[in-house]
Amino acid sequence: MDTKEKNYWPLGILSILFIGLGLVVALVVVAIKYTPQSDNSYLHQHTYTDSHINGMLAAYNAFKQAYGLELVSGGQKLEPLFPFYLNQNTPLLWLSNRGNHLGLQVRYKDPKAPTLIFSVSVLRSKQKPLTLDNILCETQEKGSTCQLPPFNLPLKGRYQIMVKINFKGEELPLIQPAFVR
Image 1 (cartoon, one colour):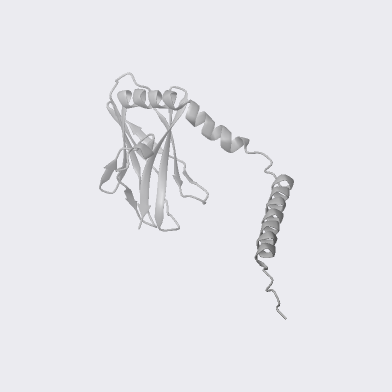
Image 2 (cartoon, rainbow, N blue to C red):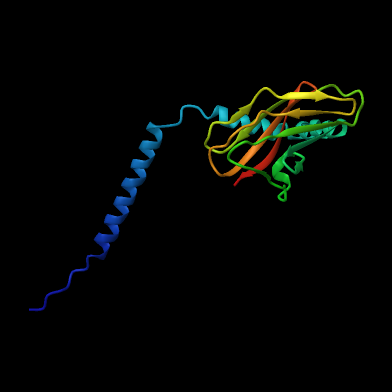
């Protein structure tokens, strides 16, 4: 008696196709059932920046014509940038874990320029920002020198120092990359 061997390949391929189809249906059901409630805050923030970038750059250029700003730490004097990501060679501000002292030096290029209002925050991804309040400023004829309160940073690694300046009714965020060693 001659028995014919049975070929099970078509059944294996068909079962894999049914399992794949079942997974796709399950993923679609889960995606429909658990949709995000609102993405408006994220989308609004980035849409606003994208649609108003030319106005923001014009405000920054007007600021640069009226003022010069340097962030001072130890022996370093760096100019925070807007937007900081355009220049890949932006130097890092070196900080330590304890006893960081920062200062802001403002030069008035225009003698009729009004005094600026600052707020400074130290940012690290996935951590609550450290806001530095009580900025003490001394105003002279050609500029201002502001001392920030001393602060400590809990972790080593990359940070960003954001200096928000109230300039002509707009908040202008200037960012300086920093590194804690």
